[in-house]
Amino acid sequence: MVNAISGRRARRLSVTIVGLVALWTLAGCAAPRSASKADLATQQNVDLSRYAGVWYEQARLPNRFQADCAGEVKAEYTLQENDRINVVNQCVKEDGSREEAKAEGRLSRRFAPPDTARLEVRFAPSWLSWIPAVWGDYWIIRLEGDYEYSLVGTPDRKYLWVLSRAKNADETTVNRLLDYAGTQGFPVQQVIKTNQ
Image 1 (cartoon, one colour):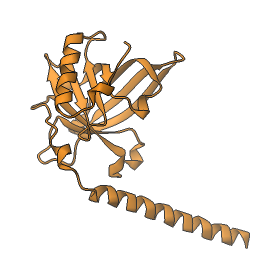
Image 2 (tube, rainbow, N blue to C red):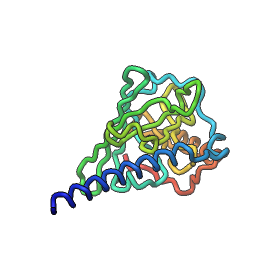
Image 3 (tube, rainbow, N blue to C red):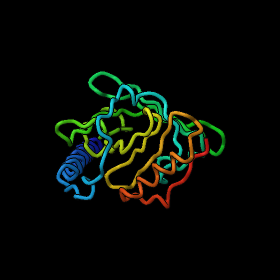
């Protein structure tokens, strides 16, 4: 009798979980995109093979997933087939230990034709990649120099990064990119500089 009750509860729980995931997915697909998000200009003609490689973070808007990063923040992007990108983010925490996060990137599926400046990344396991909500925007807003500096953000203006190829970047260039981000509606007064 106990096993029969446990079996029924397990089936109900499974059906409930599947139903909630389905509703969550449908709600994410049906959610309207605000016009202000679409107004974020991105860099034209980004060559992803030239964008690939190591980037050092120089500044960012504070975010929950980098809350433990004290410094030495870098990202490595490796271009794969079909414009897929392997992402490895690293940083040093307050206690001196290293933290690493791996992700997959791809061209955003919301735009036709695809735009190489409008990417999306997934840090969730690959078996969840069918859920739209696990993909986060990664838009290349502006490049400076010969792919030496990159301003990256999200169309909702919640996330922003200034990246450079050199570990110690030119402060004037970093500030120019932040000034540009301010003209695009990002709250640059909240930006924190990264200890490299």
